[in-house]
Every structure is written in C-alpha cells, then in structure tokens.
Image 1 (spheres, rainbow, N blue to C red):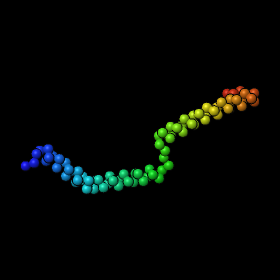
Image 2: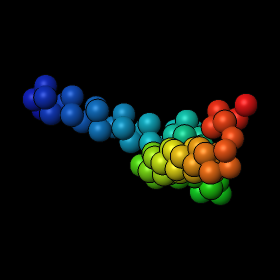
Image 3: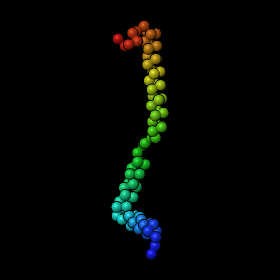
Image 4: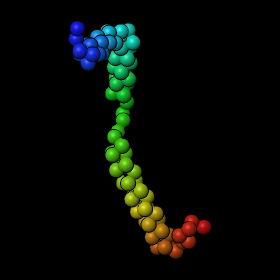
Length: 82
C-alpha cells in the first residue's frame, strides 16, 4: 500500500488532469483568448506611459498659462481675463 502522502499526491494529480479536461477549463481558455484578442484590438497604453503623458500635459498647461499672462501684460490687459 502506498504511503498516505504519495496517495494524496496521486489523487491531486488525477484531479488536476480531470479539471484540465473539463468543459469549464475549455470555457476559461476560450474566454481568456477572447478577452486577449479584444484588448489587442484596442489602442491601449501602459500606466507608465499614461502617467508620463499626464506630466507632459501638466507642464504644457503651465507654460500656456504663463504665456497667456505675458501676452495680457504686453497688451496692457488684465491677466485675469476681465
């Protein structure tokens, strides 16, 4: 008779094999493939790229505001836009 540990390992191995062959496993694989394909068709960016672009946009806005104030001063207008 095999040792209890060996018997448990054998049962676990058989359950993994059965689970891998079940319709639920096929559905999961198909769903993952479908979702991966949908994401591949989308124009997505990484979080790091998004954050970098957000920083660039913030700096650009700051520069634009500074230029607007300078133009207003040069034209003799109120920089607040009033």
